[in-house]
Length: 392
Image 1: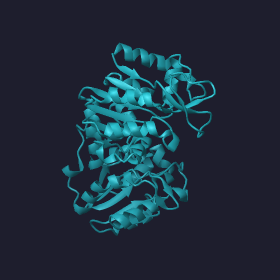
Image 2: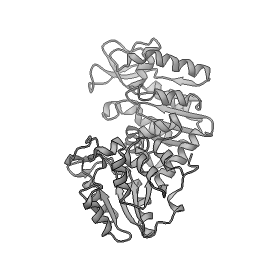
Image 3: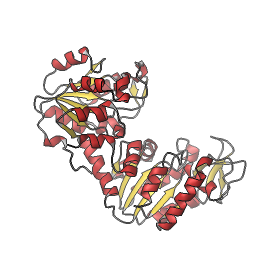
């Protein structure tokens, strides 16, 4: 998967202006980073560029300001975090204008500068050639270390690397691609996928692609109720995407043809309302007045028993509304069990990553991906626009 792409340690960085596209799209409240994972994971690449004697120009987006300057989406808190925890990082309240150029000209080798939110300029999401040229004038070399953004055909991900002659993948992007290449190209068997989250519609493409690779798919979360509904099971007031009934039936038919086991919940933890008191339902069918909010204990035991012989497990999406203590047991039990297996485990998606961290087992997972949407698209399409842009 990384064929045709240079990696950062294969190019000469000394005395160069190096534009590093990072993914610092992290939750910020009152100027404090609430989850620093994506920032921390980029430190290896940033430190390498610093130590190579280059000027380090960091660039990222944050949130969805839609091409407008919105102070609540400023990247300054990230620069403050880097300065307090790693190395002095100068923040510039500009992206590709004269202020940014002047700051970069005055940098010394090893200095680190963070540009303001790329999405404050409408040219970023539009992949505008003029904005691409402006970004290109800031640097000599382009590095992509933003796996979580590499499925976006935006200026800093697609346009800029096509514009620059010298370009490479950072260490974080390299690691992501190596793990997903293991899954996509020649996965060890048995290979199982555990999928959850709210919407089937978000994951239909990846489920269809996985059916050609996996031996079993375990489905939990709200998306399980669309599957159960499509297969004639009563789901009460549970969340359901009725428009996807026919699609789900086709998925079930393909699973049968491919001899892939499709495992769904056999019992549930429910409530009369979202956040209400839990009611245990020991059958597949949910009474009309209840909604499913977590997998039940029989489902947990079923999933554990069916997963235990895995060589590779890919997990994307929680098993229930784990944000509430009342409905977190299913997700946490599956997280703890998967982490304890002698298997290659890859966890992707913000909620899944949060779940393994809250369960205290993140250090036992083989690879925690920094990109939810990007990992799903990579599994579905086997490449990403940002990866193609890096190819020589």
